[in-house]
Each structure stands twice: as structure tokens, then as C-alpha cells.
Length: 142
Image (cartoon, rainbow, N blue to C red):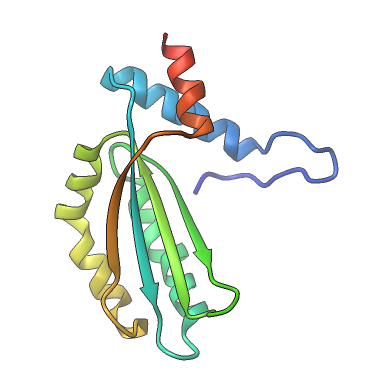
């Protein structure tokens, strides 16, 4: 998560989105590629522990992610009909960066979340085919 908040009253582009574009562009140019990669992790927290799980993600997982090579951004989505369900999406400059993070840090993060989770998280990985940040970065690199 990049710092900054949207300026809803002025209708301006949020500073954190601009920072996301710039970070992705820099990483894209450094790596010489044009793809982006996403990891989607679905978590089901124990009854009444949804907010605690969300706080652990914000306070424990996010700072670790921000230190990783190739990390771009992190989103946590909550389910309005099931507040114990969280969907976490992390964006990476490449599959290699995401895989390195998984090998080096995923088990420790899972262990930290285990006390508030009902079941092990479900992890899926995706190539990002279309995104505003991806398109802008690719256009600038050309």
C-alpha cells in the first residue's frame, strides 16, 4: 500500500495511484519486461476475528511486502456479506519476484496469521493482462 489518500472533494487523481504508476514504471524499465504478476490469497478468519485478521495484514504483512524486490502494491478486500472473509491481492513486477517472496516469507506470514484463521489461506496466481498502471507503464517504456 502506498501512502496517500484520494482527494474526493477535488476529484483529483489520488497521490498513491500516481506513486503506483511511477513505481511500476521504474521496475518495468529496470527489468526490461512488460508483464505484471498478481497473487490472490483468500482468507477465512475465525468467527469474530475478521477485523483482527485485517489488522494483522495491515500491520504485519504489508510492511514485509513493502521491503520485497519487485513488490508494487497490496489490496485487501472485505466481503460485505461475510465479514470474516478477506481477499488479498499483491502485485509484482514479475512472477520471479512473487515466487521469491513466496519461498522466503509466505510460511512465516501464514504462521503469524494462523491464530485468527479458520482454515489455511487459498493462494492463486495470475498474470496481469490489463491494468491502467500496466498500460501507462508500457506506453511510457515504448
